[in-house]
Image 1 (cartoon, one colour):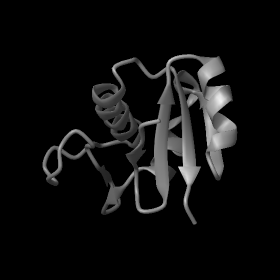
Image 2 (tube, one colour; image 1 turned 60 degrees about the horizontal axis):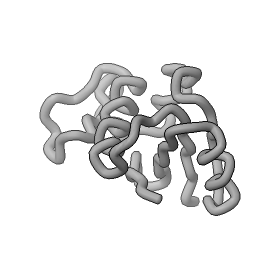
Image 3 (tube, helix red, strand yellow; image 1 turned 90 degrees about the vertical axis):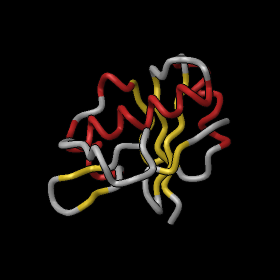
Image 4 (cartoon, helix red, strand yellow; image 1 turned 30 degrees about the vertical axis):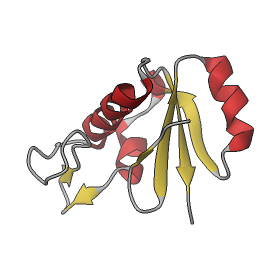
Length: 100
C-alpha cells in the first residue's frame, strides 16, 4: 500500500474502489477520514495538507516551494496525482491516517 506524507502527522492513501478501501481500513492504525474523494470539502482538506503561511499550500508534485497552491483541495489533488504515479490507478476513495 503506497502513501504520501501530507504533513509530519498525516498520511494519504488512495484506492480505486470502495471495497479495496474497506479492506485496507483495518490495516491502517489511526484512520482520521475515509471517504469518496469527490465528497471532500475545502475545509477538511486544508487541515491535513502542509501549509506555508496563511494562504499557501504545498504542491506535492514538486519538492521545492515553487508553484504553491491557493487552496487545500488543490494541494490534496496534487498529492493524489503523485500517488497515481506510484500506484498506477485513479484515486476514487481516500484514507487519511493520523500519526500522533
